[in-house]
Image (cartoon, rainbow, N blue to C red; front, top):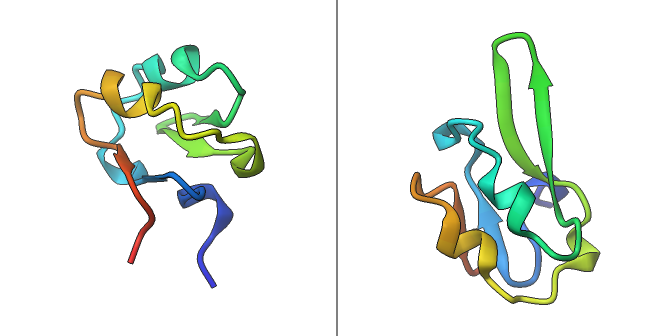
Length: 73
């Protein structure tokens, strides 16, 4: 079973690539993506996967490839 913080029905996230710019968090209209921000450990997570409607706005704004289209294999 996959961790819910890494995918929804429409997108998947790879936190290790995240540079904590938070553009994906700001862009998401459904509050799907959240922040982990603890000292030197900062990255985006998928906090409300059930809210994701597949608009893919987060994918288009992420220039680091953290948020991708589709599910993890």
